[in-house]
Length: 196
Image (cartoon, rainbow, N blue to C red; front, side, top):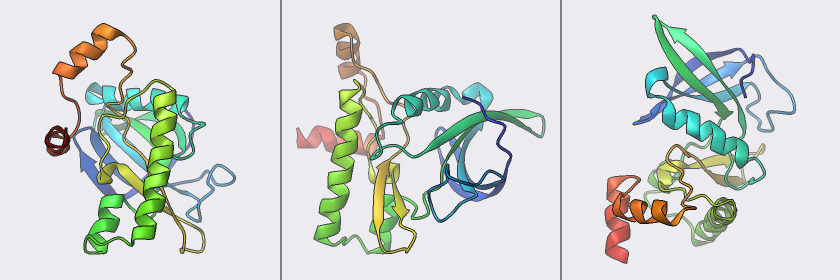
């Protein structure tokens, strides 16, 4: 799903093993942008030769479009060339509140219990939708939960993001192989194994 949306990078929002996320401004405004930040989008970008994870994420986001708890709006993808290097770019909804990890740090690690309950409910609804479609996220952590503020700035919604290593364990042999091969962020894998 490639679009002719024109955009320009403003600043780096974050970097990961998949590539870089930029805040960008676009000339496309209107109903597609339901946030008070109309015209601002996030561009998730990687060198084309290393963009398989982003290309997979684009496919999953298209399949998860009817899961509002997960799904950061996906506007499309495109290719760009910078200094002679080709980049694959995902055009995504901008999360004005950053990540859940950022929010936890801002509050000194002490979120209000009521907010924890609300955020957990949103995350569980998103997980249920992913699982009903036969997928497993594989990298769920506060840094992959995006925070969206309401127009008045008082309300907060959280949505899962970063579907680059989402898996489809449909075949029994595939599931057995995956049990032997850990996927995700190492520290969270270690914590998960300690809890089981």
